[in-house]
Amino acid sequence: MVGKLRIGVAVKHGVDVSLTRADRASGLVQLSSAPRKTSDFDKNAVEEAVRIREKHGGTVTAISVGGPSAKEALRESVAIGADESVLVTADGWAEWDTRAVARLLAAATRTLGGFDLFLVGDGSTDHFAGVIGPRLAAELGVADIAGARRITIEPEALVAEKDLEREIEVVRARYPVVVSVGQEINTPRVPTFMANLKASKKEPKVLGLADLGVTAETLAPAIVIEKVAVPEIPRKQVTVTGASPDEVAQRLRDALRTEGVLP
Image (cartoon, rainbow, N blue to C red; front, side, top):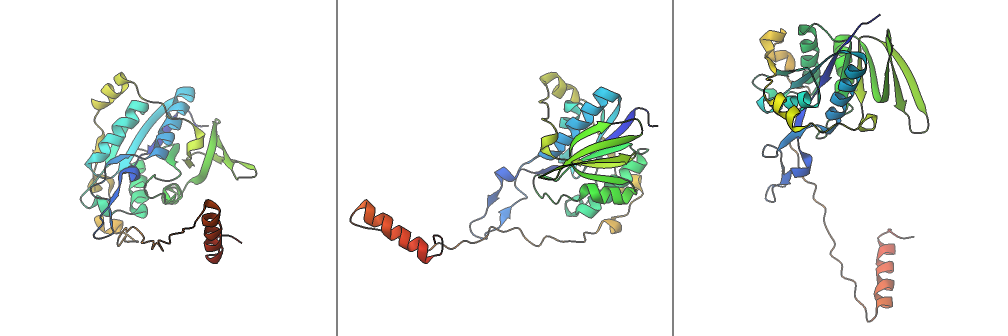
């Protein structure tokens, strides 16, 4: 039987995709200059972790893998209700792929003494690869539940409901377990001014590769992003004219039929 749960939650400080811009000359998306924010799905994970702790007791530790700016996401997590936060960082962090991130989260978990429950978002709002949960579970050698829409805590196991579109699947896993959650699981609270103020004074613990017993060589990316470009969509720029609205409408229908848009 597990007592008060030790809960870990992964938090990403990712690119705010709503504010990305493309360079007209090169056709490339300018990711380096885009602002960053806490991944929306990870806010749901933090909120769910805090709700579980409020109901069943225990502790919540927010962990972010990334650069120094990720401290902003960790402070937001503490403002939502996490008890403590940890930043895993090192030179070259911008090149880390999902395999490296999962490996570092697993190493941090072991260094911090392990968690009974580790929550992650179903995917990040910038990349949405959706593999951190399964990769982390594989690294730790524990059970993995993806796509949880509801979580119930029992003394010896966790029960999760998963939406399979036409039916609901209910699964049970003994602790320790990694669970990926989506936005339908809850609505994250908006931290109060006082909560934000207190969180701003609570610095995250910083762990480097040496602290985790990890070498840079083991974090070399398996997949390299060569470029992120805006696709070119050529326009035919066809002008439809006519002597009357009915004639214009008829010619437009004929043009759409020619293109196969209309039967």
